[in-house]
Amino acid sequence: MARYRLYGYKLTGSCAVEAALAEAGIAYDFIPINTKAGEARTESFKKINPRQQVPVLQHPDGSIITEGPAILTHLADAHPAARLIPPPGSSTRAQHDRWMAFFQANVYEGELRQLFPERYVDDPVYAPTVQRAADSYVEHQFRMFDKLIQHTPYFFGNMLTMLDTNVKGLMMVTRQILPSMVAANEGHIINMGSIAGKEVYEKGNVYCASKFAIEGLSLALAQELPPGMAAVPLNPVYRRDEVAFDLQVD
Image (tube, rainbow, N blue to C red):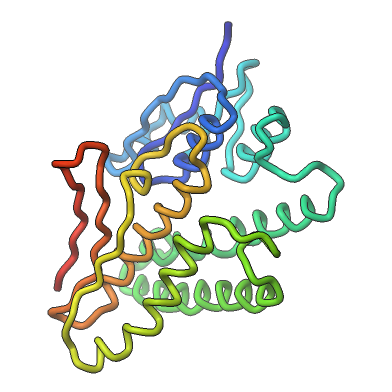
């Protein structure tokens, strides 16, 4: 019987698709495309996705689906029992689709300019200018999003979830203590994450999302701190005598 085929790679947008497939209990085959090694830029992969990006999902009927939001929406609609998405036609679905499109069109594309500014210029000398403009642009998008959702107390409206305790709680505590640490130019921040911030697993989509957020928050913060300070995500694995570290110290 034909199955879905997911073309992707670790620490890329395919992680979200993997989580959706696992959460819905969908059987699929994973084809790794090492983006760091340039495998997405090959002619053979270009035939699969002309944009030469991952993720790409091949439907059991052989058709190709690209663009993360389209893939996720298809999987959710095709497997409604998994309850990955609000029902079509509902107000909550409209808001879901609104923000999915917002982040794909604005934040994700802006972050590509932040990470790979040289792709957007003919002369490399202008890459720093593109990157600075992208920094301001992405920050503006996040501030706009933050302002528009301020009327809701939690990530999901009036419902408290682990995203609020694991992510929002951590951010609020960090915001309170960090200024005094920076002023004194000393101290390290150690955020308790999980191996779920490295690898997804079935039925753990929201929890994994919260731990991936801690991973990203910590690593990004580490790059912004003064020399001598550090922000560290601590990610315990399943065995008690093993711990996975990501440490960035200037």
